[in-house]
Length: 178
Image (tube, rainbow, N blue to C red; front, side, top):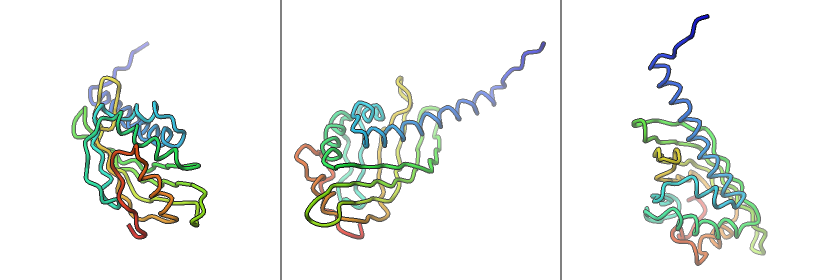
């Protein structure tokens, strides 16, 4: 009986496949944590400090913030909706080195909030360009950047969530066409 050995090239390829899977899993935890309001799961996606760039379409400056503060600000906004659904797909992952990668992924983020001002739905279509770092706890997002390509629905329901007092950042007025 012979034992097969994995060559160093094969080991590198297997590691990259595992890294890709781990990075995709973080993207999925981000969406699942948001929609299920599991803020511990959501927090597990980030390095201790994260750069947040929601400037395109929202007009906000890029901020560097403690991940715990980012989660504390995100939670009340997302919980103000009756329901949300974030679908993150088409992950294209590139590696700078063994410990740094970028994942560009499509996003469709639907928000539902019954109200008296009109349509109860608002949807953002675009993509994330997230910067990942390998940590002792696995791959984590060090920079999250949302690029909305178009938005539909009642922008008023999104605006009410964005101006929540506990939300640190992302409070610009949304306008159709942004």
